[in-house]
Image 1 (cartoon, protein in one colour):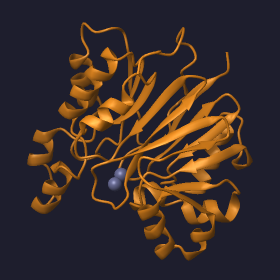
Image 2 (image 1 turned 120 degrees about the vertical axis):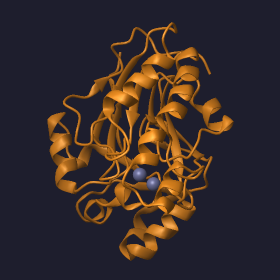
Image 3 (image 1 turned 180 degrees about the horizontal axis):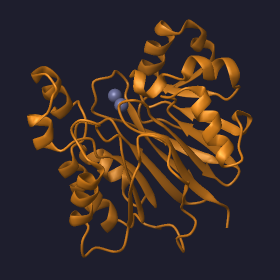
Length: 269
Ligand SMILES: [Zn+2]
Ligand SMILES: [Zn+2]
């Protein structure tokens, strides 16, 4: 069986970047850290920038695109972004314009051996999206930076063998925490970030639909704790079919999460 794995290179408000590999296709999702960090993570798994078939950008917030200018300089891979995200990026980085492959939220396209489908996310960045990546009948979902999980997104994620899902904050920690009131409103609002309890509800639905691996991501440094996020979601899936649940750390993961160890990907959805 061809290998499939996910390697979180950075996750959280200080930077987001992940590597998904399926068969001989390697894709980066977001470029929110320095190129140096990206190349050193790639080297850990025996890859270089030259192996990257494409980059999927979720939106133009700095924690997702910090490494983009340097990436464009040093790498050749196409960078995919929604029309509105691409517009915002080309204003900030005119050199990006030529290199961006744009699509409408909801559109699908192909990167190497992976069929990609985008979906619009409720977040305070124009053109913000998440992705489903499909390879050999197995689907991998990526949904961070969303204020809530609309039914349509839950439906699209159903049956993915693995999903990277935001578990940003504990609502009580957010309320009691150091953020100024307007920022608390933004983070906790419907176009902000997904809370632990909302993540847990979605996680339970995913596990029922056949998801075998959940990667909790984009945890807030100030308004969350990894143990808290993990506990909420573990409680929500208790009694359901077995599912591996891990937290993506702020810095890169110790080792990639191998998805092909599972006997077979889910055939649901
Ligand atoms: Zn973010
Ligand atoms: Zn964002």
